[in-house]
Amino acid sequence: MPLLTNEAITWIRRILPHPLPKAVAVAIGILWFGVGALIQIPIQMILGKGMLPFVSFFPMLLFAGLLGGGTGGLTCLFVTVLWTDFVILPPQMNLALANPQDGFKLALFVLSGGLVAYTGALLREVILRLDRAKADIQRWADSRDQTARELEHRIKNLFGLVLGIAHRTARDWPAQDALHIFEQRVLALAAAQSLLAAQRWAEARLSEVVKAALAPFEESCPDQIIFRIGADASIHEQSAVSLALALHELATNAMKYGALSTRSGRVMLSLAQNGSRLELRWTEQDGPPCSTPSQTGFGTELIQLAFAQLPEAEVAMDYAPKGLACVMTYRLEATGAPPSRSPPSQSKAEAPGRAHLQAE
Image (tube, rainbow, N blue to C red; front, side):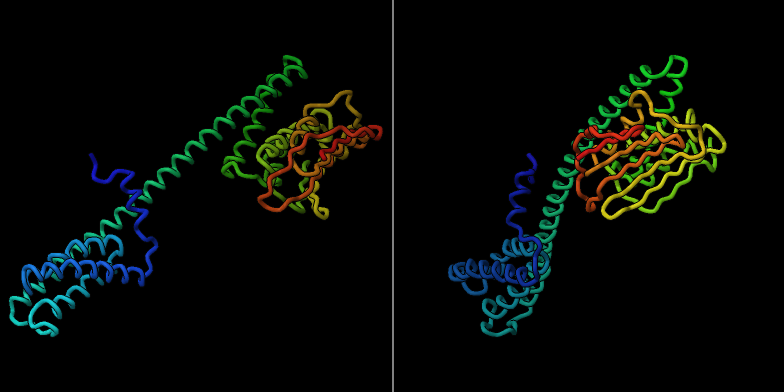
């Protein structure tokens, strides 16, 4: 059976004063000296003056070091030496020593008593460190369990998202194009995941999400995508992933049917703050004429999903003949405030050629 079980360490830790002010340590040393002195009185009465003058003080020095640390142990030792020399060893009431043997006894006690007090202080430190190590291990175990739960949740969400992308791609695209489109969408998802992993899965900066999502298209269409970053903010992890996929869809459609399908076309992407609201604007220029689609596309649905988790989010899609314009705005919150999560609602009043979505 171990000498110090977890229960014993916990119990001893509770009675150890920590942190330990100097005044408290000195008081503890004097207190244990007093206990030793009280025990010494009957010993002297039974055995005679000067007999076994230090025997009752050794355990007191151990307790003084254990409870009062080095300061408590040294205080107890110092007061014990003075009291023994002045009261017990002859001549009484005098610090002078009657013979060299008493001086040797006193010196031997100082050495051995100091070792005992040091042992008590060392034991105190060992117990405190064991208690801290136990608390650290418990925190590590709790963190490990939390990380495992978060990882399981993320993996489920990720596989669900990939499965949804696969189903939607197979439904919307012919078989000869579906594999390539699916691959590009998964690569966009991987880029967003890499960005979040670099941020330790905390909130991502909106500007970084935008640039990471459009980086492959900048290589294919140099100088055709123009960024204007006038403001920035953090967005929630799930919104970052959805927004990255949404921008990928907008850029893909622009390359196939919109401004990026011609060398003269341009895409202007700007971030600006208007009062308490942040605005992300996607504008296509100098491309083929734009027309309203017959049904809601995958990119539009992803934009709704991305901004539905942000406070007072609004998304406006304008399919003007001169080019698609998508304006996404939401209310900025104080740092650390959790994002609002209310589902988007389709606006009943829509202008011709304009789809308007709002999340209250």
